[in-house]
Length: 312
Image (cartoon, rainbow, N blue to C red; front, side, top):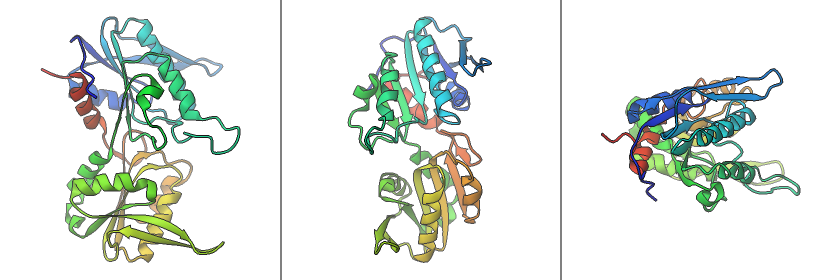
């Protein structure tokens, strides 16, 4: 659905504590004003937000990822968005490159909170003009626009990763195969394979007994190929470690790993370095040692198409 702005006016881009790097790029790409938000903590740990830009009557794009302290960044984001509405911004568009709490999208055990529903209710109460996310976990969410109460676009960072691979690893593409490390990752493997014009495979676990598990690759043959493993999130790194080991057993000559959200909790980064990969790269939805692929171009393209931002 196209979300065309009814009025043209000043556009201000603001970045939160985990979104300022994307906001700076977006403002430049859209030809918009870059505003400033002051975020500090009170001595008791509460979040203090002050919007330093004059947003009254303006169209505002606010960018923040709910990571590197998802509880704190969620509260910061909600406070900022509500303040923007209260200060008279004509339109408020939230860009949340990484939406936390989305993976708890149903009650897996009795008594569990369905976190994504709770978070969506908080956003819905703000009455936003639109919400943009990047590769959000939407497996069991039929209509996020209804759930979040605003026009909703879930963009992908996989195409930006594909551009990176093509630009930096062109010499290996002829002997490469895209690999989804599990069945859920097939959607991203398919997109990257289409963009690069090569085949893809998906790894699948088969339990042979109570103690024995066999991993098979379905789709393209991986033997003698370089595996370009693509996934949405790397958290502990366990899935990737298991996938690389399995691919080597299946005869792959090398492996390159690309992910959209490099959360890299605990010792995930050194754990992955021990795999001696050809490359390990992620987008900058979440800042990390491997966040080398910007998602701002994909977000800017969507904003231009949907809202007319940045038109000359």
